[in-house]
Each structure stands twice: as structure tokens, then as C-alpha cells.
Amino acid sequence: MRRPTTITPPKGNLGVLTVGMGAVATTFMAGVDLIRNNAAQPVGSTTQLGTIRLGKRTEGRTPLIKDFVPLDPLENLVFGGWDLFPDTAYEAAAHAAVLSSEDLAKAKKFLSGIRPMKAAFDRNYVKRLDGPNVKKAKNKYDLALEIKNDIAEFRKKSKASRCVVIWCGSTEIFLTPEEVHSTAKKFEEGMKKNHPAIAPSMLYAWAAITSGVPFANGAPNLTLDIPAMQELAAKHDAPICGKDFKTGQTLLKTILAPGLKARMIGLNGWFSTNILGNRDGEVLEDPESFKTKEESKLGALEYILQPKLYPNLYGNVCHKVRINYYPPRGDNKEGWDNIDIFGWLGYPMQIKVDFLCRDSILAAPLALDLVLFLDLAQRAGLHGIQEWLSFFFKSPMCAPELYPEHDLFIQSMKMKNTLRWMMGEELITHLGSEYYD
Ligand SMILES: NC(=O)c1ccc[n+]([C@@H]2O[C@H](COP(=O)([O-])OP(=O)(O)OC[C@H]3O[C@@H](n4cnc5c(N)ncnc54)[C@H](O)[C@@H]3O)[C@@H](O)[C@H]2O)c1
Image (cartoon, rainbow, N blue to C red; front, side, top):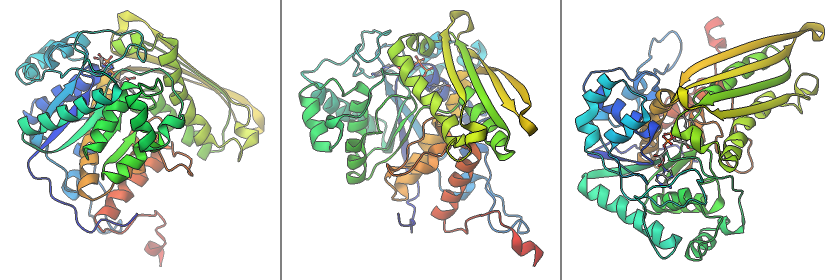
């Protein structure tokens, strides 16, 4: 990939379209409104609070990321979305019960103006949901064309000069790549024939990408990770990234596991269990949606620990993940980890983690960062898989011949070096031998 020589400045509004207007999407929208009105801080957002070191440690150049790369300011963001429930973003946020009544009241005017467009929804892919705000069309191809039209209409009405689409919809059932996903042509024929391996999330992705609009997948379902989407992303100059926001338990896993491995501490087992009571938890009660999530959550450890390279330390790890829907907790999830480690001479030890987290509070800043970075990538002339955005995902996408990078610290370094590379700054290797010459 060639280094961008120019990055088009962000002029005009940036349209942000969320597929799904549930807990994550409405917490994201409300947060942007509160932050714009100086009523809250963008805690958790790399684009808003992160800094980046440039040049040598002695130079003292550490600007904010948002001052270093030409990101769109929050003032320019305009929001829309789709959902199978007709509730406005205000009603949906009240239902999700993430925000306090004080914060909700402050964002009421803004959120009440955001009404979902009709969803392309099919119960075969999310079994625990049903709602009335749904498109009707002859086949999946026509549904996808309607979504394309929605994007074009939204762009016109909101006077957005660019758009980004982000999947904040429910987790769909587990699917694996098939022949119909292998080329753009086969995929289009498949949509016309209502092929069962084409899920609604893929229709949104197809519509966005073929409109030249970047797409991020915040859920673990198979959507962008098929050759047809990658072919189309190259053809239509659309940057894409996914999948599954890395927020709670897996975030901690990818913080702890690289540390244990760096110290050559052995691991016998890692048992992770969760209770959560939001709509996401309800959807994940369905074994087919859970399977999608489980695959996404299980991958990280294996890639970080590299059991083939360290068979004595990590060759026999028992890794289990459980999720239980427990309504009293709402969006305030509890995730327990029991980690059985061993040290010098094989002596066993244990670590217990009890993370009382707030799912959507952790996910909302990631949605913001992804939208801003995807828009930046497009203005920098980048398209296709944006591996440098792995930092935000549980199951990061990468080129087919590569293995994904899960280590949060390598991901962070990769992201920052990509920003330096985009801006023509020297990459940072952390060698530092020059300080001792
Ligand atoms: N919150 C987190 O920390 C976190 C982390 C990783 C991934 N995720 C994923 O993000 C997604 C959103 O999470 P949430 O807590 O907001 O869930 P949610 O249930 O509150 O919201 C999802 C919304 O998507 C809508 N939806 C489902 N299918 C749709 C379709 N085809 N078209 C349009 N709308 C559709 C639902 O009606 C619902 O309102 C889930 O898939 C979840 O697994 C969340």
C-alpha cells in the first residue's frame, strides 16, 4: 500500500449511520451531544483524548491525535440509522437504561430528532427479536437497493458531504463463508435468489460499500469478512473494518495475556463467565447467536499465546467462555475470570478478575473513534481492510495470508505508527540507541 501523499480536509457534515439504534448506538449519539455541549468528557475515546509522540523523546512533541491528523470535529457529525423498532433515539436510549435520567434529559431534544429508518431484518438471523419497523421487498437484492437509497436520501437531507455506516445491530447467528460469498458477482446473484447464507448485516455492508461509504462491524457476525465485500471495497474505494467491539472481558484478556506471556508465565486455564441483562444479553441467549460471540471471544488467547511456539507454557490451555442473560443487571455487566497460571518450576497460582463494567459506556467511544478514523482513512485514499484499527476489535480483520494481531499493545503501536505514516512522520521503533551514542 502506498503512503497517502495528501489527505483531503474534512469539509461539511459527516453523516453517521448506525445499523441498530439500541444501547450502544444511542449511548454513542447521546455522548456526542453531551460532549459538544460541554456537559461531559469523551473518556475512553482515543481520537478525542489520545496523544501521539512524534520524533525523538528529547523533542517534546506530543500533540493530541485530533490535532495531528485532520479528523472531523464532533460539531460536524450528523446522525441517522435503522432499527426494527420505530422508537426515536431518545425512546430507545430510555429503554436501554444506560444513561442517568439527568444525562438523558440533557440529550432529549437531540435524540428525539433521530428516527430510525425501516430495517432490513429477518428473524432467521436473530431469533429472539421481532419488530414492526421492517422493509418489505421481493428479495434480498431489492432490500439492499432500498438501503442504498436510504443512504443517498439521508446524505441529501442532512447535507452530509461524506457518510460512514457502523453496525451496532444485534449479533446474528453463526455463519461460515460459502461459495456465494466468494465473488461480488456470485454475491449479487445470491441476493437475487434469497440465498440463506446472506444475512441482513451483509445487505447493509453491500449497500454502504457500493455507495463508496466506509463500513465498520461492531458485532461478531460474518459480514465484511468474505471475499465479495473485500472485492467491492477495493472497487468502490471504501475502507472497511471489524469485527466485534473489544470492550469488557476480552479487553482485559488482551491486556493481561500479553503481560503473562512477556514474563514467560505459564497458563493452564482461563475460565470466563458473564452475566448481563440488556437486549444484547437476551439475543445472546439464543445458542446460534451465542456461538457467533463465543467464536469471537475465544480467538484472542490462542493468537496472543502462540501455543505452537511455547508448547510447555501454553500448549494445554483450557479456555472457556460463558454468557448468561440475567435481567436484573441491565447494561451493567459483571464478568468474572479465573486464571490458572504457573511459575518457576511449574508451581501453580491463580488470578481472579471481577469486572463490574458498563457495556455501552465502554463501547460508545469505540464507535466514535471508528467512525472518525474510517472517514480519515477514506480521505487519505485508503480502502479495503484497515488492519490498523484492530485495536478496537475482538476479532480483528486482516489480509487472508496473515494471522490477526490481538495484543492490545502491538495494536496500539500499529495504530499510532499508521497515523505517523499517513502524515509523513518518522515511525517509532522504540530502539532508542541514538540516545546513548
Ligand atoms: N456493548 C458492548 O460492549 C459490545 C461489545 C462488543 C459487541 N457488541 C455488539 O454490538 C451490538 C449492539 O449492542 P447493543 O448492546 O447496542 O444491543 P441492543 O440489543 O441494545 O441494540 C441492537 C439493536 O439492533 C437492532 N437490530 C437488530 N437487527 C437489526 C437489523 N437487521 N437492522 C436494523 N436494526 C437491527 C435491534 O432492534 C436493537 O435495537 C451487539 O451485536 C453486541 O453484541 C457490544
